[in-house]
Image 1 (cartoon, rainbow, N blue to C red):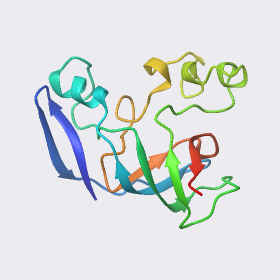
Image 2: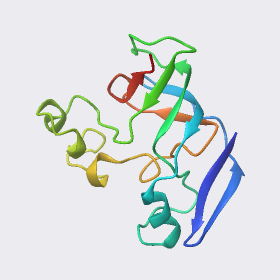
Image 3: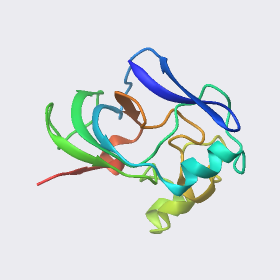
Image 4: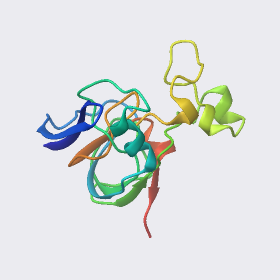
Length: 144
């Protein structure tokens, strides 16, 4: 698949990357629309550090291409919005309604991604043909 990846400050490239595999609780979304956020501009300028080779972007709409085991309430081909903030929906912060401070994706349960933003920050983002959505049941919203 084609993906827009961060190379170094001031440089992104369109590269070929493998289509992500999905595991339990995850979904694969074929991206049909995405935006360029101000955060992407900060990444480009080198004002926010991310690892070289990481796919950028975090505000997509798309169609569900695959569902991992345990994902219920969604169907293949369903059009969805993928949240820019990617909470687990199960940690203390999430259960307390503070989704932007989710720590479920870390070993000790403390937020690793500033403001709960993981796509294009700590995991591959959405400026690609496909995106793997962790904790899909907490991070997908059907488009009516």
